Image 1: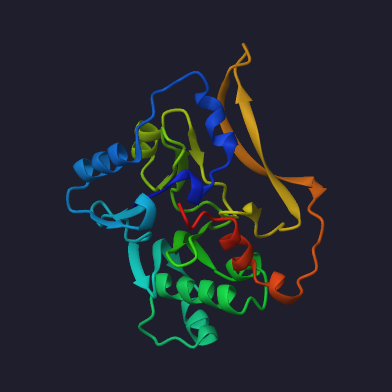
Image 2 (image 1 turned 135 degrees about the vertical axis):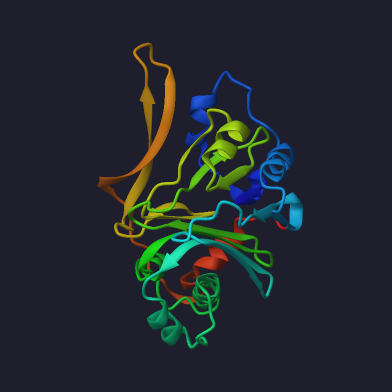
Length: 256
């Protein structure tokens, strides 16, 4: 699978760019999707607003980590993997037995967006299984990405030449498309454009980018980890501020 979001929408962490400073070997998002199509000719590509896109192929799919894409109410979701507590989640969200993992996480997102009875980290923490997923709300321009705490599903992210956020479960596509400006999406984390990375087991602590350097001080790679020594100040969830989606949507540039 592959997804690309323009810099103004995706808002990728600037730390992803650090290993590529001084290099210009990354591709444009259009070149990356063409590379994906050439490798996976049977793939389906979904063109989203503002030049964003998602692509999915079932070729070379692992039976343990199947891929799916669902579009409901202008919400696009790519889901890779499987949920072990899918029956309980269907019951919790009032969904039929035919509801897939992608349908469940879309419903969970809609509950958060529209009613926000609890924070997003609590919702993802209740997903038991091996998974990675990407949600894009075409109405609010909200991007919601998550990966299970064990990192069971291959999932990487990076930056294209123009600063767009690129996500894929194909390491070769990411490496060839983003050059050095890429890395593993951190296990156990959520990324929401406008608010950044959060670890769903330690939501009160910051997630920081850590550089790996060689003996000469050149940055070889960047990885993200929880800073257990730094806490994020608690903000009361009152009134309209209780809806995290409002804050994310307000940070977007709808007019662009």
